[in-house]
Structures are given as structure tokens and as C-alpha cells.
Length: 634
Image (tube, rainbow, N blue to C red; front, side):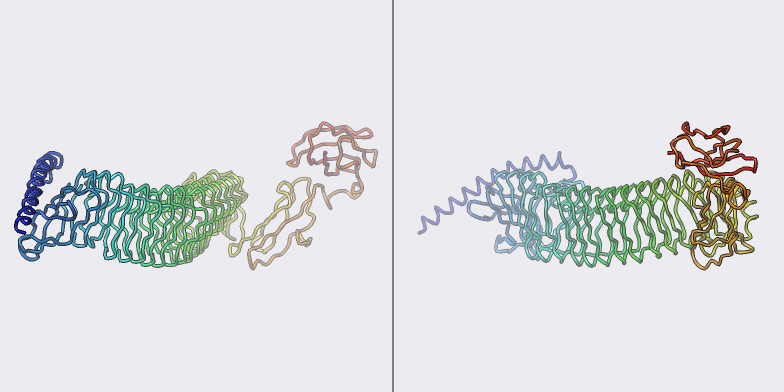
């Protein structure tokens, strides 16, 4: 019996001696690396204090880090750790029970035989490159409840583990340390239901990580935690209140996101540069969306919650698939460039709660056709709607005071403009190149301050001003450049049209509250579109109203009685026409603008074959006077 025991002791002593020789060689290499490769590690402990087995044929080396209660040790390294390695919570030496609380830097560096490892609950610190370049390591079970965070710019414990695909967190784990798994080829991560914190950049650049189930126990997710990962969908935990900066930045495969019911803030860059992100489901808890939060994503329909108060700069810039945008009812501000370059956005209705639209907020939204600005809006920022070249209509609330520089620059399809009564200043180039404006209505009693290039539109564009304010506008700097200024009531919008702009116009008379149809030359007034034939016509304006005058080519009641029966045929014609009387002296042909095109002496008929297809005015001279008729050339 004694012989067997002596033989066993000799075997153990031989094993320890061999291991010590191997470790001595390893320490020399390690010391070289620590001194020359990692010069800031000069305080690293290079010698172990005792040895213990950690499985069949496996030996672990420990350095004592506290020789008073509580007794603690650091894992210094191991010998023959091939296969599955379980690092213990405690280890006994000289009848003292030590808690294993840390793993030394490079402890298992380059161990190609290591396949899997279990990290115990007791671990509080894992130094850099502890398992670095373990090319065969495929699986890690992480039971450490709280490990000190790793510093940015340093090598984390698993750096270079090119085969590490599986990571499982034990049920007692609460914290995933900062940078712990940066850039690893993880394909599967299993979280415990007790994790509360996922650290900064913890899974950044894990491009093989396609799916992850983040438990509802998570209360914080650090910045860049999953940036540049391969995630295709994300469900944000229900108790998480904030998504930190760039949490899911540049996740190329991310296509759908469901936000949690407690989420209050989406910080800067969270979902920016996610080119396949098409669907985001918001909960009615969100109050703030940060800068560039969803920039350059492919969101198609955006239904923002009623709880949302602020949208920061560039939040949805370059979302060129965004077709539908619905704001919530509590929104207060829209930041600079918030929706710039959203090429497919066609309709925008700014809610009544919004007070400010930032600079270039909707810059270059080239498909934007219709715009409604809420009644609480006070400021339109510089270039807010610049180059919205498809915009045809804009409705502005009555609280607006300031229109910034270039606010509507290049809105070349805008048909009409009504400036609300409280506006005091309009910036330079604000409406330059709005070449389709048919009229401008200015409701302020005092002409707003404008600059020399504010309008940049034809001075022929009609300007409608409040009753009794004609002289104020006609004498104001840069307003006086409008040559066609008319007075109108300002309580409601009154639109006065002609059935054809070349036939005549309608003017409003403030003192008499009447409208009058004024025909152009060689036209006459027929009736109003509602059938009324009074001209001038007294009107009472109690709401936004439109009146349209019907004009026709001819002289109407001013034509001599003897000429009212004059006719020619056929009309429309391909060329030659004949008249129903033979005393025609001369026929003059004019276009609809009154420009003389041709003069023909009459014999028995007149040939119009040389005219292009269209509508023309004929001025017909007879012994009884001049008659005017409309000719349609086929």
C-alpha cells in the first residue's frame, strides 16, 4: 500500500516538474511580449504561486492576489488545456480556500487545442488577450456576473479567436462588459433572463451575428453595442428607456425594428446607415429622436407616435424610400436637415403643436407636392423647403412670424402663396425661382421686412394686400417692385379667377365689398360660374371663397346691333370659311394675346389653311362697324 502511494507521489512530482519547465519557457515568452509588445503592462505579475489540477491531465497555475481574507487568486495560465476547459470558482492551497476572481492577460494565449471554456461566476476581471488567438475555440459559457469593462483601443480577451461562434450567458449573469466580444465571428448568442446591461461595443462588428433575442430584463444597451453586426431584425426590450448612441449603426442586413413600450429616447446614429431597414414600429412612449438616428435607411412608411416631442438634426435625412409620413400630435421641433433628401415623400402635414422647423428640414424633397403647416408654427428655418421642385400647394398657419432665407427657393411648381398676418420678416431668396406663382397674398398690415432678392419672381405676378394698405405696400422697399397690387379682405382667403387668364380678370373693391369682372380686349363678360350675371357683384365673405368669371371672345353688348347676326362657317374649320353676308371688307386674325397674325381682304370666302391648329380671334370690318368672333382651326 505504501509502495503504491510512493509511486503515485513520484508520478505527481514528475508531472509538476515537467509542467514547471514548460511554464518557465512560457513565462519567458510572455515576459518578452509584455515588455516589448505591451510596454504598459510592466506591473503584470509574471510568476505563479501554486498549481492545481482542473480536470484529467489538466493543470492550472495561480497567483495569489490577496493573502488575507477574502483570499483571492488570479489564473496565471494552464497546461494541457486541450478540449473543454472549466475554470473553477474556488481553489484550495495550503488549507486556504481561494476565490478565483481574475484571469491574467495572455493566460491562454495561442492555445490552439482549446475548444470550449466555462468562465465561473466568481470572475471579476479578465485581462486583455486572456484567450487571444485561440484559433480552435468555438464555444464560451460565460457565468461571470459582473466583469470590469474593457477599455477601448485595447485587445479584448478573445481577440483573434477566429472560430468562436457560440456564446452562452449563465442564468446569474447581469452585465456584458464593454468591448468584450468586439469583432468576433459569433453566430449565436444566448442571453440569460437576468442580464440588465449590455456594454458599449460589446458585439460591435460581429458581422456573422444574424439574430439575437434581447431579454426584457435589459435596462441599458451601450453605444455601438451591435454596430456593424449582421442582425436582420431587432425587438427592443420593454423596460429599456434609452437606445444609446449608434447602438445598431450600419447594420447592413437589418430590415425591421420593434421598439419597446418604455423607450423614451433614441440617441444619435442609432439606426443610421441601415440601408435595408424598411419597417419600424414605434410605441407611444418615445419623446426624442436624436441626430441622424435613422439617416440613410429605407423606411417606406413612418408613423411617429403621439408622445414624440423632438426630432433632431438629420434624423431621417436621405431616407429616399420614405413615401408616407405621419407626425404625432405632441411634436414641438423638427431639426435641421431632419428629412432632407427624402426623394419620394409626396405629402407633409406639420401638426399644430410644432413651433419651429429647422434649417433645410425638407431640403431637396423633390417629390413633395402638398404641404400643410400647423397653426402654432412660428419659424420656418433657412432653406427649409428649398428645391422641393414638385410642390404645388402650401398652407401656412396664422402664428408664423419668420420665413428664413431660401425657405422655398426653387419651388418651381408652387402656384400660389398666402403670407400670414403675423409675419414680420422674409429672408433673402426665400421665394426665388418660384416661377409658377400666379399670385401672392400678403395679409400683414405692415409690410414684412424683405430683401432685394426675396422674390426673384416676375414683377407682373399679382400682389394682394389688405384693404386700405395699398399705399403701404406700394411704397415699401422691394414690395413696390410689384406693378400689379390689389387690395383684398384678409380675414378669409378670397380667390378670384377667370375661366381663361387671357380673357380677363376679376378685381375686388374694398370700400364697396364687391367684385368686378374686367374682360380683356375683344372679350366680354358672360356670367359668374354660379350663374349670377351681376357685374359688379356685391359679395359677403364669411369663409374662404372662390369666384370665377366666365368670359367669351367677342364684344358682347358693345357690338353694333346690325352685326350680331354675322356668322361664318364651318367653325371649327380645316381652312376656307364663308360668311352669311357679302359686304365684308377686311378680316384680321389675332392670337389669344391680341397679337396680329394676318390680314385678308374678303371676296366671297377667306382661307385660313396657313394657320396652325388652335383658337384665334377674328376682327371683321364691315360698313356697319367691327365684329369680333372666335375661330377654331382644326
